[in-house]
Amino acid sequence: MDIVDSTQTAFGLKDGRMCAPADVQVGLACGCTCIGCGATLIAKKGAKKRWHFAHHNVEIGESCAESAIHAAAKQVLLEHNSLRLPSMRVAVYGQATSGQALEESSVLLEERVVRFERTCAEVWEDGIRPDVVGYRGERRLLVEMYFRHRVDESKRRKIGELKLPTIEVDLSDLDVSTGFDTIAQRVIHETGYKTWLFFPNEEQERQRLLAGLAARIERANREHQVEQAADQKKQATRHRKLENDRKRREAANQRYRQMSHEDKERDLRERLGIAGRWPYYLCKKGDGASAIAEQAMIWQAALFSRFIFQRANSSFELKQTSVIQWILERFETGGSSLESVKAEVRLYLGYLAACGFLKKLSYNPYESQGYTVVHGELDPPARFERPRTASGNKLPVSAEVMLPPAPAERWIWRASWPKWSEIADEEAALLAASSHAHYLDALLQEITPFSRPDDPLECAEILEEWGVPKEDVMSLLEKLGLVLKIRAPLRPG
Image (cartoon, rainbow, N blue to C red; front, side):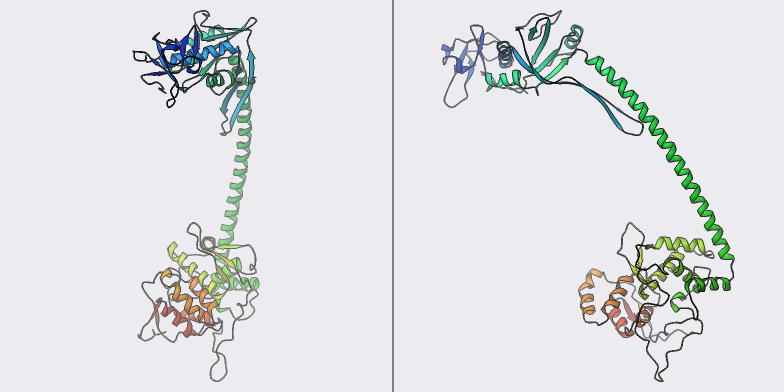
């Protein structure tokens, strides 16, 4: 940092001593000269500007200001005959193969004050001339001070050959406003601006620490190798277990596929306790061909038994991917694409959610769709009685499967749905005005443009089981812009 200008310096030399402006008379009467260039100095002690010395009739030299501070610092040390030494700590660092950082350290000297019997400036010591040498009996301490230039490598090497303790004091940030008190604080009392250039036995201690560090690293590496071997053994055991489990599942699935339809039905009846007619929600058939080469009543009842039956009110979270993977392993797909199988399973899980067996969890873009089982019994959740015919009899059902009533009108999904944010207020108003808001809200939470029944009327048929009028369901979907009623006749069959 360049702290000088063309006129000012902080100290002047008078009668062999460095003086501050406060120590001398004003102007040329100060009797001071520049320690750097020998020019006559004028003591400036005005009321506005800070006190300083200026060169008389000559420009200040490039190094005059720093030479003055440097000389003042040496004078302070010579007069005090003492200084506080910084601590000397040796530390070495390394890293084990595991990445663990290791350190060995020791303190050769705690921070302390040393008092000299005498001090001398600019004394030659076997080819070098330190700024100050402090003496205590036969022991010597070398002190270097720098303003612009630190001790260079050549001088460092010579200091190392002398094997004498040496410190360096940094004066580089002091400027023309510096007084003797500031210099004394820096040179005598503070340690933050002092560094050791050489400390006896430092290198020997460093080598000792390096040897200890190498032993620790070797020990840590051996321990890491043992841990790695144990981990590899655990991984191998885990892989073997996973492979054996996979083979057992594969064999069990193969045996299941080879069972007859009657045996599969008998097994599912025993597992689920189905005594009479097959529940309609375990035989949900689509309009087209199934992507799963197994009767709907079998694969859907098997899914229900594996993931839903007697699992309500538990911490179990049903993941859509887990169900799809199980279906792919358990049943033949007849060459159907993976996407078509996924779509069919997603639709069925959505159907079970609409029926009240599952609750769809909040969407997470980083995870598979999740569900919780809210009703794990064979009987469907509690619902209102189904509408009766004029004669008082219940609507006819299949002798084998209980099916919802056939649709009476033709509805289709709109090709483009509005954004939910755009219809949120209208949705809230419609639900608030309905006495079946709970069921209607559950339906809206479940259906998406990518996960919905092919026929919109199926949504109404499901909710009709719980006493929600079919007209209310379709009216809600129509008002929200999700469905469209067409006048085309019903398809045959």
